[in-house]
Length: 188
Image (cartoon, rainbow, N blue to C red; front, side, top):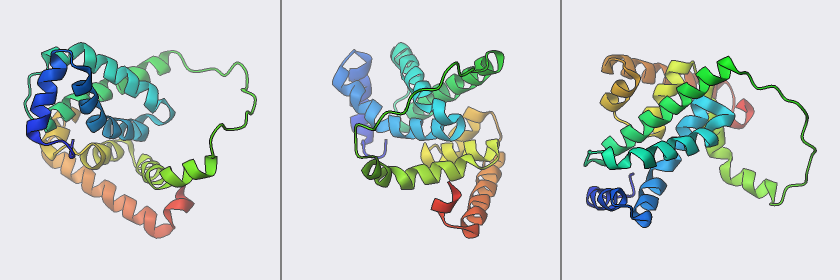
């Protein structure tokens, strides 16, 4: 949401609530990277599926969203993402995945080396954050990847703002310790 001005946000939100696809696309493009990064930290390989479920829920509930601030919208979308993740965890606890067969190896259609070079920094950072204890990883992801403020993070996680600050501080300190132990590439 950083690249969208508050005025543009209000205009895009109102138009998206009336059904304008281009305006919804603008909101999606401004918010999706943070949603996906957060879900990669907390949900790992299920992140993309959960992001898709999140946006289905956003589409269903967009007309009922009444905030006029980008931060409120981002918090609303992140709360939906978190609820989809929690629902997924409960469902997977009831029905664990069982691999019935192994997929055969197929050559990649794109240049894998070039793709890896493009995303290694982001993936390394997300992998490091995912190594934190769950509560610290979630707070760090919401505060610094999803760009929620302390109050929004506290409300979403149903924690006190002071607790959020402490978890963020401890998470960042732990990341610093991990990084001092070796290079980020070594951490993967």
